[in-house]
Image (cartoon, rainbow, N blue to C red; front, side):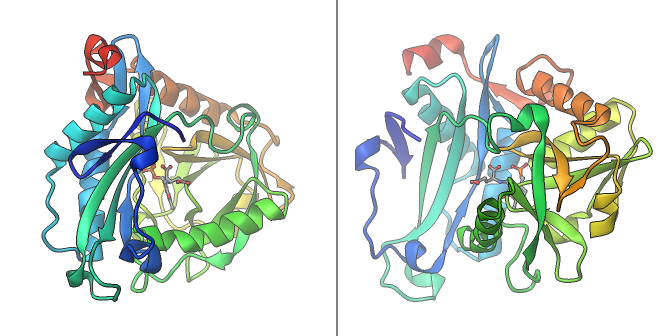
Length: 312
Ligand code: PPE
């Protein structure tokens, strides 16, 4: 997670000085919002994948949380992201913008503290383990349920929401699985602790509807790429047993990218290996993010290679 600089409220701060006071309200109550974005090495320079959409979701999450007077625009944040990558001379990295409620006295009223922003970048390899991209992962259906959307709002990447994800993820890993699939309060499949999910059956793709999950930007990209490849994508409720009898399953997210699921709850999915449609989607995804796909121009914001390598 190391880098030379972290952007904090308009300034590039050396990594070791990017620290906060222990009485920062965000730390006590989960009053923060974050984003996760990836920058890929392309032949034309470092390309940030769907930066605009990620920053719009960031600002929307802050509005869902109910923060008033957020001081930055999407365009200012976008400049700050590029500045941070350049300063650290990364050609490929993960980008983590964070809004955290700072300064005010402790207390649950959001209006007594100040929204502060940091942007960190680091080189983050594979999220679900090195072999995951090739061989797929073993998932468990978690005994923890996704929150009812009128208690914790799933459209927002609010830091406190991730307690639910952390409970599910930790239990899954301690139980010997790679990751957890979580059901919504009615018992339908929602999403994973940090990814959205697709299943393949009889040549078509299915994904749970958006209402009860984070609207993943990778999920949206996969829907478009699958359409480009000629596949039908159906967004409809998915049950646990539909997972067990799927031909293929894969999960996707910024950190995880596109990863096949080879087994769920000790039941082999399809052949128990990455399926052909998953493999095609994974290939199209990597081609796109590396600047070699038909959608690359629309989805990658490429910084100048000279500027980036000079750190300016
Ligand atoms: N659902 C959840 C709950 C989620 O956290 C993510 C991203 C997604 C779906 C996929 O969304 P998108 O990245 O827009 O395609 N999870 C982030 C956090 C990972 C972490 O452990 O930290 C990520 O992938 O950056």
